[in-house]
Length: 338
Image 1 (tube, rainbow, N blue to C red):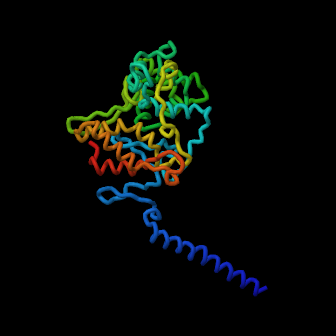
Image 2: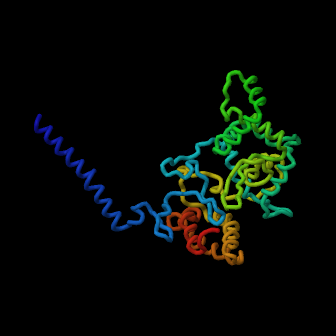
Image 3: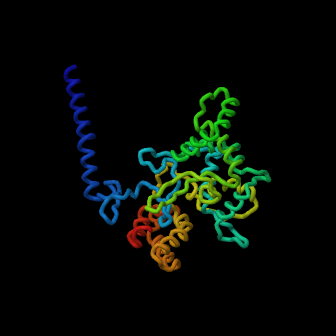
């Protein structure tokens, strides 16, 4: 018995040393000597030498000077990798795609071919009629209760705006409580639909949106105000606009502009996606650097082709662009965005 136990302990010790010491040390040594960049997370640095990210993990870029990555269900959080897992029948998926399309989709043909749809969404919204009926915002909130609630909970400024509304509309809140006796102390999200219904009546053709003002001292403050234009309207009401204009042909967009990856952290976009964004990126850098837009566009287009690659050394798959890598190249070439 003692011999068997001793042999087992020696085997256990050997396995622990081999698997927990020798094997990891061998991998570390090979990684650090043969491909240290990849082994250390593919971390890239900015001009100041500080790390700015990993080529393996997507991060958000919001400035117009930069190419933007795929949508992320994980909000680009490397510790929360996940897909959206939304079914095709889930309106949340349709809404996410629609809000992405609103500011960027273009007309396919006709006199408006190549022009953005966004300005027409704003003009349609300002008329405040959907399917022939008035009060677009009211109809939106009634049809999509969850979206109205999500708007209230999306930001502290939204919650503050609705809180102020409850104080100035005490009778409306009281009527809600009377009609919903099971909710004697309603939360802000409970009041979302009635808030938007009241807002729509009081502000026809407008939507509550964040507006930033700069005072004489140069200090910026942001507050929610009724607006009749801007990206919030273009995004939120594109789906309703499309319903009212179902026969208008629109350009197709690369699928990866609208779909999330399985991890939510895909650092690449297709070359087709990057080329769709090229006009915006080039125009903004041209304005920042005070150069001719065609020249800047040609430079950035050449950069994209130089950095594009296909999986398996070009044998299969679409050509891809690493978003962080290209955006760093733009920053190095043109400086900081204005």
